[in-house]
Image 1 (cartoon, rainbow, N blue to C red):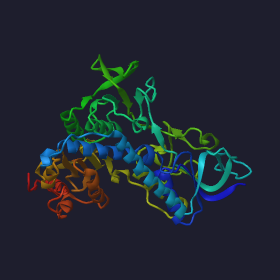
Image 2: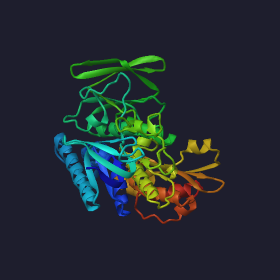
Image 3: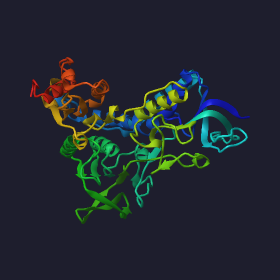
Image 4: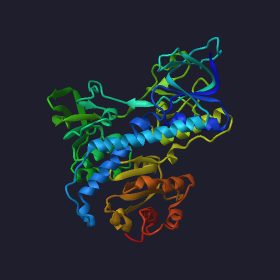
Length: 474
């Protein structure tokens, strides 16, 4: 028997389940179709498990230099099995939390693969969902008034560099490693690649990063890229930029794998126990019935308007499947906007320049708004404020004084255009900068927000003062 709903969501990841909760709050009868586990990539294969491993790597690295803090310990050993057990425990606890939220919101969850059907006896418009149940039971038929596609993404590979789970890994396989390799080659120096490079280096793995662009984390401000490269190299990570990996040169033998890259017209061979391919993510648009609709897909991503409607006005799409900023907190907010729009709540469109981005390497990186180069390209007359953590007492207390805060402002209007940070715990500090952007604040206003002493946040206040040439401790 077909079940009727106000809203059916394809995908129970961060964007999908948050959208479902908001729909429930608005009184909409809601269902989620999820082929895997509630929480999706972020909870099970991305944000949470990787950050759990990063935290263990940070503790291990810090413990090895504990004598700097006056703490003398014996032999320090890494029990990677316990590291993985801790990661799994955190993921499972959060998974149970999401399941509880679904029950609390009276949201129906169908475990299976959902496909959009064309016009049928159930509906004159495409949108009826056929669910192929995981348990092998007969397909369920769901008849929604509205649909949200939140099917997420998966790791992208390079042609000829196929993931085999033994020598060549994506981040999915790397998260399940039961034993750390002695050495690894990371193809791709973007956000995920640098997080893994930092983590594995802290765990004691010999790491080489090969990046096609002329700098690592190329989407960040150029000074942030330069600083993280300097710090990573100081820690022993080998970084090779402007390098084109040649998949056809790959050789797998015994306990190692080698691959060549073209650098300045010459080939160089790199060898390690594993290769981690980290070259971005691709949207999950296959096998969900898009061919039965007028929904447009360009360069692999579903096309939507400011309220996340597709060409089929009752079908919305959010998160990684539409491209843009492929971040969990972005997908969540997109889901809320989509639900409020279909419910007639008249939400405001998202200004993506107000969204903070974080990189959880050691040290961390975080940013919001325009980089210096982006602002110059847009024709702004700039003033820059920059302040080092080396002059911040709390950073010295932590024993982590590398990095800085950089504020990019419009000299003509005094508006803050962007804030960029690298250093200790900056992913926890960036929201102040995000709020400053939302409120259209000026460096003067941020500087005259009295920051507690000693705190890492003092670097933000000092960088704001520096934008007007008034930094106190520089």
